Structures are given as structure tokens and as C-alpha cells.
Image (spheres, rainbow, N blue to C red):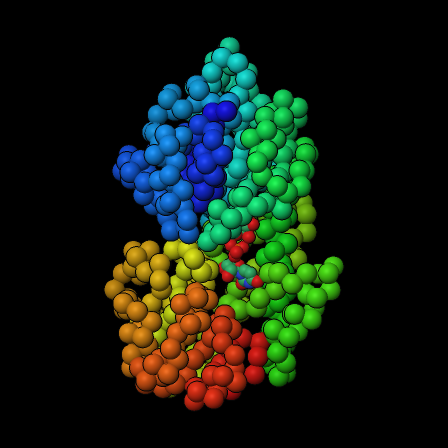
Length: 431
Ligand code: UGA
């Protein structure tokens, strides 16, 4: 089977490498010559554990090809997956211009015979029907095409594992032939198969992300109760999550969700709700709480730090990625800068990306200890393993004041107290 991916971001590139590894012939189409050249040389452009190795392995096996030319990839393909970005517009609506633009290019190059075109990008309900209309308008007369929605559920940082071990594969289409081809290509993967209509498949993706964001905001809301009353959020959410109807996962309170998915998808679902006349107050609250916990963290800094020098550990929106899109760290740092704080930051992977945005407004340290040097407090914003395993006595020796404000609850409060720190964490008593 020959498969083409349009776009080489987290979803496109990870899935392309995994399918190539299963033995399919895989094309990846991009639009930036320098990026395609780098990909051809085995540079994945993004930091994702295991991706470089998988990319290089399949390049050497000649199963993975990168190109700028639709006419090289599309006419040989049985399936075309659209995996381009759908970023939020100012009003929260998903920007589908790239999806429609690439659809037109795909349509013009469809081969004689049957091709499935499938959106793996997260797109609002109704988009695949639009895609189908465009394809049917521009395709050559001899080409036959059907659309299928096949949303992707991988997480950044564990993208390869998630692709290989899906909980479910969702396929929405009104073409039985398209469903069968997509089923065939996913054959090596486990997980439930959910075969459904186009609209349901599109909504499933938004509902999944919004549900997870809701769990996080709920945990964050309860953490505010715990913080104000002397409770312990971890014990609370563990006990809540032991109820199998609720489950333990995605109940970690902290400084809120970020990344390229939850913030954008909750906004887009709100926008769709407004367009079709559905009350979105639950989702509005999910967003508000997410912002409130970040403001709560900023307040803790202002209230507890004597001095203006802050060390920050962690910039990426979660560990094991260099992605800083909608990262809580950026919101927190920008607010602290406005209040005249001097910031020295360290992150194992995301510093270059932050440097592009914040430039020299903050200092960038070579390691976690250098970041702590002379600081009036250390703020933990991302739970990288490196920070959990840090030599805390060394950290204490570098800090001017032994104060840690932890937005991700990576340490045990008593341990920090015994080491002589003041430790302010999230939803737990400060010690
Ligand atoms: C999320 C979903 O988990 C994937 O299933 C989905 O495919 C993806 O979006 C997408 O739509 O492409 P991702 O954004 O990569 O994946 O990362 P998550 O692990 O879900 O974390 C998102 C944010 O939630 C992070 O900022 C993380 O720190 C935060 N989070 C997560 C919490 O604050 N608490 C938790 O308990 C879990």
C-alpha cells in the first residue's frame, strides 16, 4: 500500500514513520524546501523521543520519501492523510485555510482509480464534507475519491508509543470501500475499532480532548479548595480516581493545560457551539479555570518572593517535547516580566523555541543549577525527570533564598522541608 501524508508536524511525521516501519511505501509532502531537505537527511525538525531513529531507519530502507511535489506522491497513493495544522483564529474558530488549500492540490493530482483522502488533522464537524466537495470539483474525470475522517489521538512526547498502542481507531466515512482500506492500513495496530459516520468521527476527536481538558480543570478547581483549606490535592484526586467510573488519569493539578491541542480544541468547540446554538458554559468554565490556576501561580510568586530574581525550571508545555505552543510558562513569564522580575530559565529541550519569542527579555542557563544561581526563588513549571532527580542540596547552595514554588508538584513537601527549603506547591500545604 502507498500512503501519502500532507504535512510533517507531530501527527504527520510520527504516523508516517510508524506506517513506513510497518512496510508501507510512505510519501510525506511539505511546502518548505529547507525543511524537506533536512527531513531527507534524517533530521525530524521536532524533538520527539525515538523519532529520529525511526525516521533514519525507514529512510535507509527506502520506504519513506519526502517531497515538495504533489505530482510525485499523490498519483501513486492509495491513501492520502491530511495532517496539516488547524491553528485557532483570533475568535477561537479553527483556521481551515491550509486544509482546504492542500485538499485542492491533492484533488488535482488524484490517479485513475480509487483513492481515500482522510483528515487526521483535528477539524470541526462538517469539514470533511467540504473536503469532499473540493476534491470532487477539482479532480480529474477518471479519478474516484472518497473521504474518511480518521482522527489521531497521539500525545506529544509519547507519540510513537501512542501510535503503536492506540486505545481505539476511529474511522468515519460514508464509503465502505474507504473504511476497508483504512482498516487494512491500521491492521498491525491494536485497540477498539469504531466505525462511524463522518460527523461523529469529527466530534469524537473534539469530545475526547475537551473531556481530558475538563478533567484537568476539574482537578485544578478542587486544588484551589485544597489549597485554601489545608487539604492535599494528590490524596484527594487519587481517592476520587480510584473510583473506576472516574479513573486516575488526567487528574494532575498544576498550572493548567497548554500545548497545541487542548487550548485550541476547547476554543474551537466553543466556537462551533456558538455557531450552531449550543450552550458552551461548561467549556467556558474549563478555559476560565485553566487561566485562573496560572494567575494563582503568579500571585504565589508575588506574595512569597522577597526580591526580583526568579529561576525557572521548565518551559515546554509538558515534558519530553520542545513544543511551547500555549505553554503556561510563557503566560507566567510574560506576566512576571511586566512586574519587573528578572528571570533566568532552563529547559532541557525548549530553550531555543522560547529564545525565538522572548529573545533577551530573560536569561537562558546552561543547566538547572546555573539557572538557580543567586535567585530569590525557584519556580518549577514543567515536570521534566531531570528536575525530579536534581541534587537539591546543590540547588539550595546556588539559590540566594531556599524557596521553591512548584507548579507541578514534583517533590514531597516533607522531604523539601527537611532539606531546609520553604516549599510552596499546588493544592497542598506550604511547608
Ligand atoms: C493531547 C491528547 O492527550 C492527545 O490524545 C491528542 O491526540 C492530542 O492532544 C492532540 O489533539 O493532538 P498533548 O497535547 O500532546 O495530547 O499532551 P497531553 O499529555 O494531553 O497534555 C496536554 C496538557 O495537559 C499539558 O500541558 C499537560 O501538562 C497538561 N496536563 C495533562 C495536566 O495539567 N494534568 C494532567 O493530569 C494531564
